[in-house]
Image 1 (tube, rainbow, N blue to C red):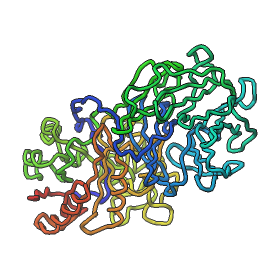
Image 2 (cartoon, one colour; image 1 turned 90 degrees about the vertical axis):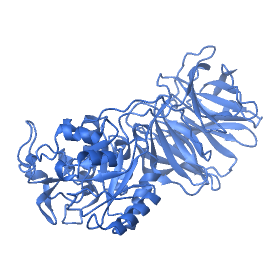
Image 3 (cartoon, rainbow, N blue to C red; image 1 turned 120 degrees about the vertical axis):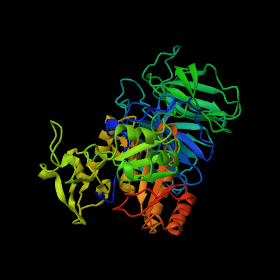
Image 4 (cartoon, rainbow, N blue to C red; image 1 turned 90 degrees about the horizontal axis):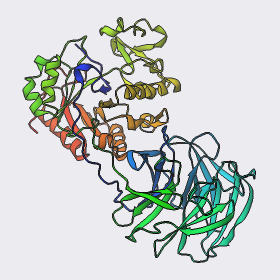
Length: 568
């Protein structure tokens, strides 16, 4: 039996591979110990209704999002582009400027005074456009709030579109640009227009109650914090006019190292909350607010460890033969913590009992590949599928050409919704005869993996190869594509050496994904001709481990009918 070279892997696609969930652990406190990362603003960045947190690194300009589930961190993802290397560009706020339901990012250049808005589609910048006017030259004017600051409920300016709140660093004066999308339509000073004590800074904008009451009134208010005392004051506003000023209750954290980073409805109850960060530990905390009154103080939690993710990332093996060719199931189960096998019941390589032996009571993770981009004519599903589906052989509209070098394999367009093979198809583009794939086809491949994740929310999904920006920066159904995966395996990274593949894996590693609260698994599979080529295998293992990857070396891509039990 010969298997194709590029195989995306799906754990538990069949009942025989159902994995027992490991015990859940208590959620750790969410923190970012690198204090150069700043939690700048909040907004809804993925498909759910939860408010997420946007981070920027002060030294590198990198951008990151914590995708939240209330006060708990659900996942972490980079934005695209990942970095704004000119550190004079300051991220100043997040809001939906164009009314498309997507959160956008507002930027200001500290030297030129120019202002630009990134229109986002989820985590990806769709376009970047200057405001009108594009420049406010005096660098002492700083954008300190982005929200609808309409002058009165009846005024057309209170249209739900975000406006820009400015504060002058020297005079302490505050002015609002009323915006229609990216265009300023009017402007006015707040009343009072000045808070001369420079230690007071605006830390957020939100609805923190009405005059004399914590009940929301539909007007956005200003939250201030004093740099020395740490006390928080709320200006309850009606448009530009302060109608009440009062301290939050309580007015501060006991430890002055706690500082408000941003505001937003982080608890999902329709009320504005305060996001705090500790200046020494980097820990985050949410004050769940009712107007100006704190209802609860919630430490932001890291994702609890669940059935997703790899508790032990190495050693691992990729093997496509039958159970009796493994050199002993007990030996394989003892030696490896991750085992990739061909468990297609139509092939009959493994029985449920044999898979259970490999799991070793739940200590190991057993995964079996699932085709995502091509069909092999020798498999059962080429001609036989469940009711309601069309077989690969019969679906001629989805067939987009032969897989060069593999006469029994046909590229299939994943936009048609098949559970297919070879996800690197999404990277092909149209300038090839070996499985051309246009933008619809490419997006269909990512969407198909989203469908798999919906069908198997607790199973391991590992992608083989296809490690380019198409997948790393891709989105599907408003979700960052990498968040769907538990790991990534790539062939021929060090033997033979492939600098491009090495760089791609390093970029995935930099995403710092934690599915199920565990580090994202990145594995390399190199081919050294036979299990006797110890020198080449050792070289591949050494380089892979130095890059913080999990290595395995096998005989050949089209082989893998034998397990190599390397002594290192």
